[in-house]
Length: 102
Image 1 (cartoon, rainbow, N blue to C red):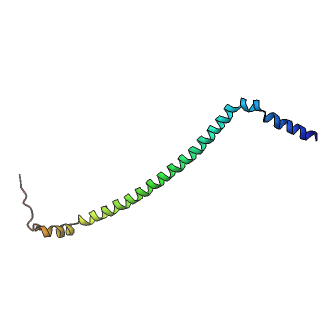
Image 2 (cartoon, rainbow, N blue to C red; image 1 turned 135 degrees about the vertical axis):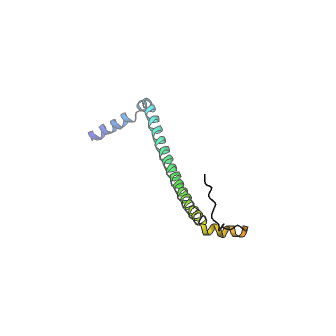
Image 3 (cartoon, rainbow, N blue to C red; image 1 turned 90 degrees about the horizontal axis):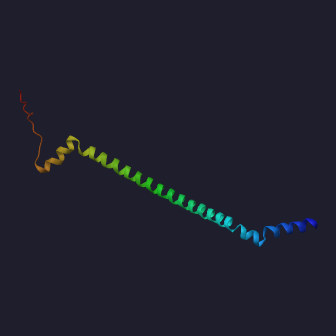
């Protein structure tokens, strides 16, 4: 029974109004730290989502670049150039160019 009374005294001492008022600044500081901790977690999640979105966009652009590059390589071959120039009436000159000597 004596321990029970001392336990109540400790609780009363800890929950004393004067003690609470004296430590309001500390409680506000701890509350501010908790808010900052939660905000930091949300900011990190948002940043991770943005990084993931950007990496997906980069992969899509990389695939598009490779596709366009392969199409350009195909279209720049001599036979494809001849085929594309034929409707315009252009054709390869059969005579070799003339060299000028000095």
